[in-house]
Length: 330
Image (cartoon, rainbow, N blue to C red; front, side, top):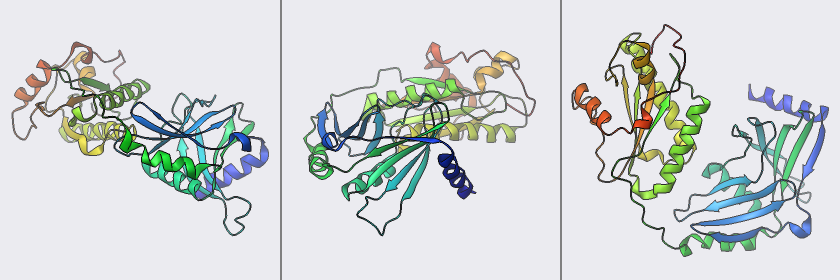
């Protein structure tokens, strides 16, 4: 039914006023700069900020609107390809529908889409970022990125990663960084608090870089409900966290998931306080010498729970206060 959403957007645009932000031609040429451990290719758009492609030493391309914030916060945007007037045989194309962050920012896009935008600009295409409900939902906003001066700056940009200085050596602390993602009863959806915690984890992985060899996810559920149901619930919680981490830039190959269900309660107990603390996914950043808690297939639950508790910092143990609701499971 995706065509219905496009039909709605087309009719919406015709029913609202439209604003277009685009650089003037004399200010449009793309610019290149090297800043620290990053290479940046950017075009300044008045009243918006910088449209930026970013490359690091590992060559993973990303794109973002830096300095831009949508007043409505969490909303949809369309990334479109608008061929220039001289390409009469090519039609406009919608590349992707994306959702802005809760703060209204167009955060770093994944490499696949960023590469497509880079290639289209290199071939002289105009990229449009379309926001159907700008400001008071009565105005549609289009931000246009022009290909003016793109190729000369692109050459310097692509050669930049090989010229970056080696990153300073960063080591994980002796105590592996641990984070807790809390969930409501019988739910696997990420809350706003969980989303903020995910961002902290992604920042931590980026900060420690290659020192992080593994990102361990231990997902639990409380004891209410059947073992089978709680096992599935812990798997769903782990999957929700894993997807958010990958979207935030954590390499998928570094993830290791242990869905424990109700098999290893930590802490043990059959009261609401213990249930709250077991509705979580615990995320641990491990280095080359780090010892992950052993999988339940290889050790008893008491040993794994004891290891997890012995290395868990105090800040991880208390979930936000919340009412215990629902009776299906933990």
